[in-house]
Image (cartoon, rainbow, N blue to C red; front, side, top):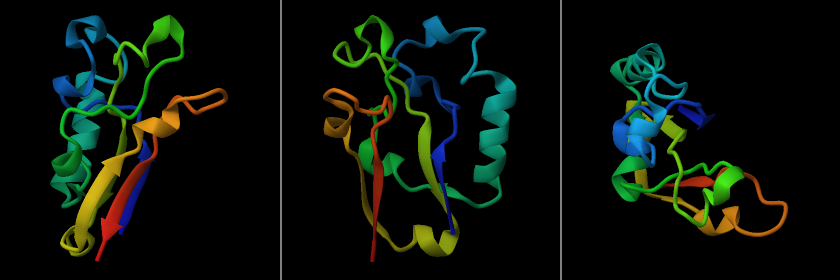
Length: 113
């Protein structure tokens, strides 16, 4: 099983472009991070992070956040142990975020053998 989508939480400080800018804000609050961690503690693994460390999945449309690389990593694929063992790769397709009419999120793709 995989739990995938826009979680609207950045579980680590490195998942936002500037942690100081998010102090006392949504996406990084202790209750949000604890809820995310509870899913991980229940046995679900972030199968994308090992392949995409340091990459973001979301950029606000305002203030030129995308070209300035001021994003957040808030989209995840958390997999059960059986599925996590079958993941052979993952990527965040940043190029899909470019262009007119694009979503403010980049697709997250996992490869399964």
